[in-house]
Image 1 (tube, chains in turn orange, cyan):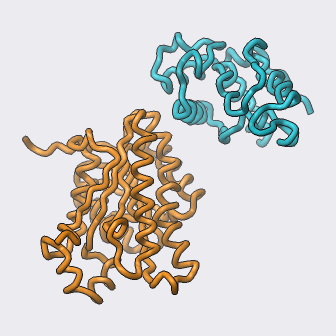
Image 2 (cartoon, each protein chain N blue to C red):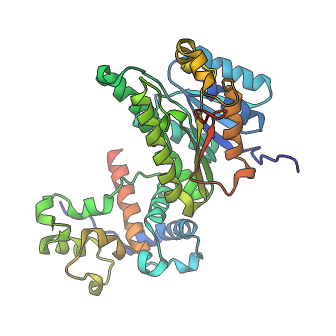
Length: 252
Length: 142
């Protein structure tokens, strides 16, 4: 049996697509023939680089500057994509930030900014996307969670809370949207070699790797592979699940 | 100011599109969508179906229909406390509802009427009128 993604010609939105895991998801989806629009918050140069790389590889990608914590901006962006493409088949809620600190020392902004991006961002983008998928009676949504949602480290209370919320939200969305054949799952990465985890990897490299059964950090491509599997034809009986892609993290 | 009457001609002008849109949303035959059929009791419409219907109508007619628009328009300028008590329509609220949903047979307005049961009264004609009102508002706004 050969892997048949069935994704050619589909229309996808990826949030936080200009760097790291998001970039890898954009490039992998585009490589499967998906017409990808990705949101980025501020790094226009990085976004342009992603578009150029996708186009050079023969794919289709559009970059839109959208802050996912801004509900009105998300609705407007989704509306413009819906008008341009006339359908939305796939939504990948990847945009996320970290603001690590010991909880007792956390500033209000460190708490609210993480929750606004990581949790409200999912609501803000999914809410205007869902009607398109409902009308199509088909859709795939993948929310990016994290091992931190169940196995948080020190200084991650805000991030852990946000990813625990994403897990619960994923299950609730799966229940609500199943009648319209919209499958909703989450991918929970372990420690991945991206800018976001740089500080953790620098500060506690040996301790972190010691906690991973496969004794290596994950690559952004490892996560993209899991995401693309979940939105492919090969995952048509999977919904409401959290897929941990973490090399066996904290299992020993 | 009293609302301008919606004529039968206006309703029949939009009904074919409303009919097809609703059939697509509910996954039923176009012929099942008659003007006076109850969407919930006659066609088993659920809340997710109403969401889909309104979304499709917005795109088909290029209108915007805020959530809860029908009940908001029924209440109009009447204070909430005069309109309902503990989720049950007052006499004044029920009178407003009967006036607004003039297309609904009087026998279907049971008392006490729960606010969250109002949607059980809706028919395709209710949504034809919703579309016409939205079009009028859009034209008035220029």
